[in-house]
Length: 124
Ligand code: HEM
Image (cartoon, rainbow, N blue to C red; front, side, top):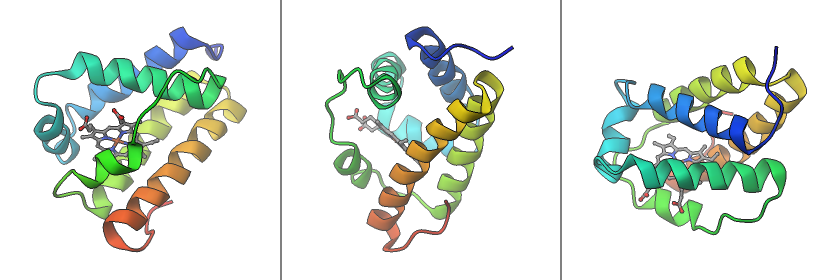
């Protein structure tokens, strides 16, 4: 049984995804380096972000590209794992067409970030 797309189910996706991120050997150090122990505001921002993308709720204002470009040590492999984990949760929670929409947005942004870090896009 898939979740309906609304703020509550988006919050479940965000919380489950970042619970995994925090236990993922390669990704955790990057996030902990930038966020430290202060996860609650990050999670709240990510719920706003995904609601803006998926529900056009318009509440997220941020400099996604600029913030990422400040983060040191990001490599292609981080994107492979980030996208793999995100896709696993999106497909577990939502019906295929909705999961596809999440992934289209995630891949588009991941591509622009890879271009910024590496000058090329390797993981799509
Ligand atoms: C290798 C992959 C990625 C890594 C390691 C990563 C890491 C991070 C970190 C550490 C932050 C916190 C930055 C800060 O608060 O200073 C952040 C913020 C954020 N990330 Fe990522 N990220 C990745 C991919 C993505 C992708 C693909 C998306 C989009 C779908 C995304 C969307 C965001 C957003 C919206 C924020 C919040 C920006 C803000 O607070 O204004 N990230 N990311």
